[in-house]
Amino acid sequence: MAHQWKRCQEAAKAFTHESYPGNEVKAKVAEREVFRSCWE
Image 1 (cartoon, rainbow, N blue to C red):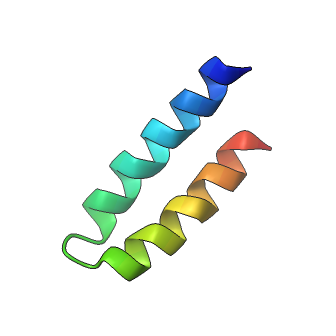
Image 2: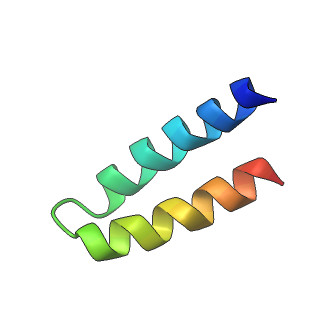
């Protein structure tokens, strides 16, 4: 369980930081979205 959580978190971080370089606010929002869709 925790393993998948970690994987989703890593995937979300990688995705958002490539998509929104230097935009912390958008990156955080997108990170949550990606994490949620990965987790479900």
